[in-house]
Image (cartoon, rainbow, N blue to C red; front, side):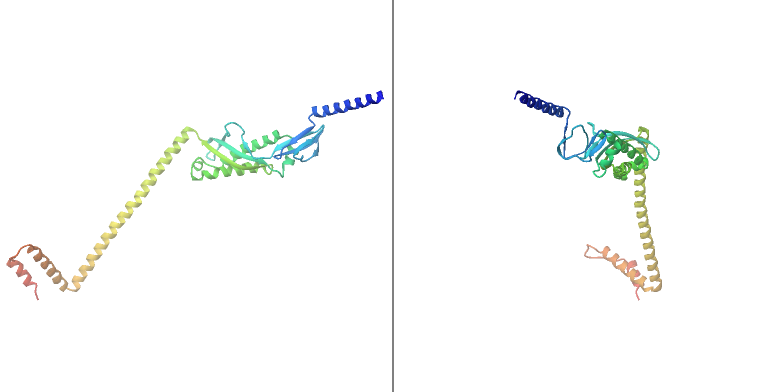
Amino acid sequence: MQNAKTVVMGGGAFLLLILVFILGTNSFTRVDSTEHCVLTRYGSVIDRKMSTGLNFTPLADPTCFKMTQRNFPENSEGKEVIQATTADPVTVEGDLAVTWSYNPGSIYQVFLDKRTPEAAETEVLNAVREGYRNALNAWTVNRIFSAQRANLSEDVRRQIQAKLGNRAIIHQVFVRDIRIPPAIEQARIAAAQQAQVLDKAQKQFVIDSVEARGRVMRAEADARAKELEARSYAANPALIQLESAKAMSQGLSQACRGVQTCVIGGSVMDTWKSQGP
């Protein structure tokens, strides 16, 4: 009986020892719903995607990738300063920020190729930097600071995505600022100001040309009217007498305006009579 108790106590101590060993060797792994974890044992994959929750993983190594959208870079400033060469060529410096995530359809292949999240993230970082430089290489300084600037972020996103393929998804790219050498910046500003002066001069030239054309057209119309009037008088001399009568009548009405008795000189009346029928 004593021996039986000893065996039971020994067996219990052994099981307790095994339990302590299991707990002490981190044989349980908690998997979040936002993670994709691959379980390996001695280098061989035993589970391509671990279940969400608590998993029993004795003598195994889980490798987990965060599947949520992430920011690059993950520093306090939320941006990375990258130098690139434009098509001019001019070396410029820009502040870049990217949101990205792993592709659920290719994450297992990423694990097989990289084995660790750190190695996979290094590839993403290199793709971001090279994609940004490739995009800037197709832009001139003038184009960067033109109305087309809004298209630059999309060009950078496409270049980064092309470098990554389907390993990761680039959701958004933010090109916050681009700085060029001070001498080139001053020349660019001076050129922009000169362009404004030229534009203003061209608009004023158009206005002046329209006004000058209007004056020419009015002068031509007046000359045409005089020519037609002269032709009318030549064709019908009676019109001249009629115009003279009108002028005489208007002259008399003006001379006698505001008086009760109006004396008309003989020369005037003679003129009137001489033009009669």
